[in-house]
Length: 144
Image 1 (cartoon, rainbow, N blue to C red):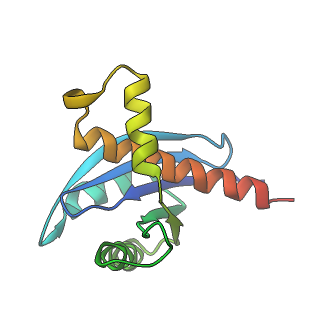
Image 2: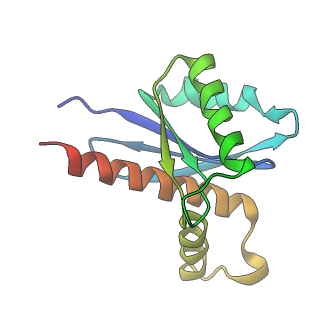
């Protein structure tokens, strides 16, 4: 079975967490955080990540409300996914990201970084890692 490299994004209006993983190892790794503004993300940085990692697929976390309904941020994440697909001509998978920020904060707490020592960019890249890990695990369960 061919191994696929996957880049995942935890979309936010100020920061976008990024993680990388492989379908062969089934493991996700937090990479970095890309800055974003009201005008959009730092596309040059994203382009650099795409060039460096040469992913086969992209994953974007879908920030649904706890009851499964969508918010304005959900729609913005979908637009971001559409823009990724249009710019890089790669398949984009949207993944439910409920509770990934809580999981990211727990990872930092477990590492001894709680309270003021937790920085938003660290949380975002760890949330991207949690999103990608969920995607990789779901894919491995769906394979024969």
